[in-house]
Image (cartoon, rainbow over all chains, first blue to last red; front, side, top):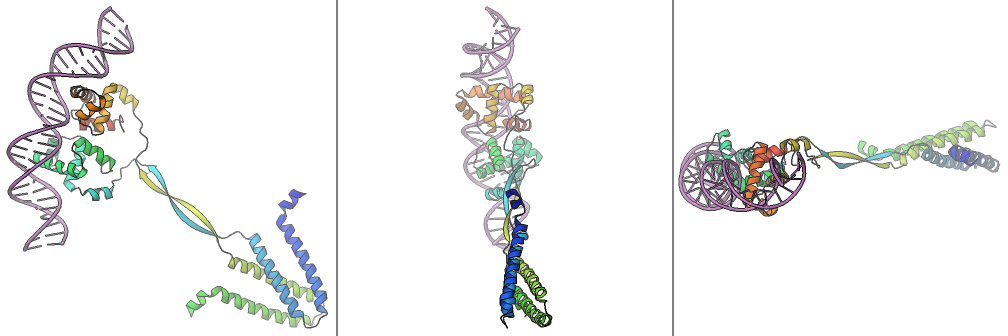
Length: 155
Length: 155
DNA sequence: TTTAAAATCATCCTTAAGTATGACTTCGAT
DNA sequence: ATCGAAGTCATACTTAAGGATGATTTTAAA
């Protein structure tokens, strides 16, 4: 019994409301029909009552309108590819040549090998690496590699 | 003029609708009042019309329900966890001490620093690193680090 | 066009790194 | 108990790396 009521709650309420209203209408009809010139009041009341009923019905029956608010949530994904940290690169102000030398150092090349690969002399590479170490605030190539990887300058 | 209409669209529409309805009511009043026993139809029509009006009003006036949608924004980070390649480790047959030295080399430590950290002498570290390089088939610490990372011996 | 940064090369010097070899100890496995 | 691997330390030597300084040339920007 209770379950039945709960299940058909809305239709029952609507039915009861309608019955009450119709009774009210009939009663009003009897009351006001005998009083001349009061039809306007009667009709106005009906209008108001049924407008309210309509509003109530609409709120009961229609699905609530939705307004979407988009919130961005950061999801961390481990990536196979390497993404260079451009901001760090700017901060450190490494020149193109210094960056090349850094990459070759990271690959395990000796200064002589780097010099050969870049078609310059050994002292040139020494100068580059010295300035590189200064900018990275290190004093050994292994430290430079470790720091560069940590700062995401190289893979 | 057009802007004014757009701004007050809803109130204007409501006003017009109301005027039309009242006119309709008046007209119906005149039509039906002379026909006896048709008051019920008249009142019923009024009820239906204003119920519909109520529904329409409710839908116009109800505030939309806010719904938050979380959008995932991808942020790339380097892999959090490191998985050591045990099979490679076995193949290379690196001793415990050699592995420790390798890790410290990768961190950018000098031989002297490694010696101090492991509480042994500098020549000992040199011996270890020499054997390490031999096993890794390299001849510089930077190459050792590069190869060890490539073989997934160290992060 | 001038100027500053980048890139090049050089020299001198110091230190770190790497190679080779030998010796000693410890410890687990045969 | 013996053997070998691992670990330790030492010496001597060679080479690479790093630091300091100066000079020249390119190149890009003010």
